[in-house]
Amino acid sequence: MADSRLEIKNLHARVVDGETILRGVDLIVPKGEVHALMGPNGSGKSTLAKIIAGDPSYEITEGEILVDGESVLEMEADERARAGLYLAFQYPVEVPGVSIANFLRLALNARRDEDDEIGVMEFYNKLQNAVKELNWDDSIIERNLHEGFSGGEKKRSEILQLLVLEPKYAILDETDSGLDVDALKIVSQGVNAARSPNFGALVITHYQRLLNYIVPDVVHIMVKGKVVKTGPKELAMELDEKGYDWITSQLAA
Ligand code: ADP
Ligand code: MG
Image 1 (cartoon, rainbow, N blue to C red):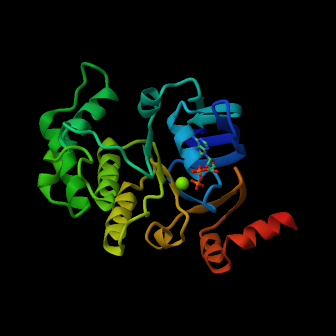
Image 2: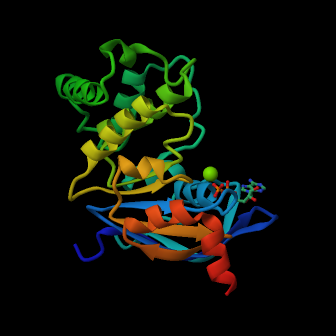
Image 3: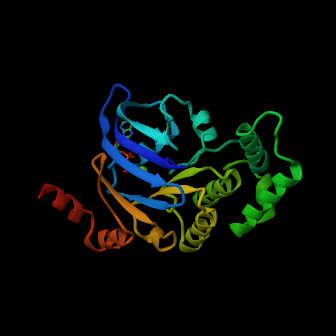
C-alpha cells in the first residue's frame, strides 16, 4: 500500500484552553521502520505521544495524524487502538483486579469481530511466546496489570502487550527511563522481536543509550514543539557527544 505509514502533518496543539505545546510537527514513520524521537526535556515528546493516543486534555488547532492515509483525529482512544496504534506510556497505569492474561485477551478480542474471538490455545501460545521472548516467568500472566509492579516490570509488561497485540504502529515513550542495563536489554530484545515489514515504531527517548540496543532507521530531534532535524542513526551519536545545546545553537544561528 502506498500509504503504509504513520504520518504527522504540521501538527499544532495546545493544552485545552491553555498553552500551545506543539508548533508544527512533521514526522513520517513508514511501516517496517523503527524511528527514534529525541529532544530536550519539555520539548513536547510525551505530549505528541499522548495526542496520538487521543488524550482529551489536548486540542489540535492545526494539522493531521494519518494512519495508512486515514485520519484518526475524530477517533476515540479505543478506535485508534483498533486502527492499529499502540502507545506505551512514560508512566503506565495500574489496573487492579485484572490479570495480564485477561486484560490481553479482552484487548485482542476488542480489536476483532464479535464472531471471530481468538481461540484459547492460540491466545495462550501467543502469550507464552511473548513471555519467553522477554525472559519472564510464566506466572507473570496471572498478576494484576501493573499492580505493585516496579518501573522495570511495567516497561516489560508494555512490551509484552506490544508483542501480543501486534499493532501496526507503536509509540514507546521513554521506554528506557528507570531501567537498569539488564532490563533495558530485555525490553530492547522485545522491541526488536516485534520488528517486521508490517510494523512501524516511534521510540521516544531523551538519551542515546537505548539506541545502542534498538538501532533506529531514522532519528528525529524535537525542540520546542517542532521536529528540527531528521537524520540517520549517527545523528543520535552526534547528539550524545555534542549535547542538546548543539542543536539549539544551530537553530539560533
Ligand atoms: P517532553 O516529553 O519532551 O519532556 P512534554 O511533552 O512532557 O515534554 O512537555 C512539554 C511542555 O508542555 C512542558 O513545558 C510541559 O510542562 C507542558 N505540558 C504538557 N502537558 C501539559 C498539561 N497537560 N498541562 C500543562 N502543561 C503541559
Ligand atoms: Mg516525556
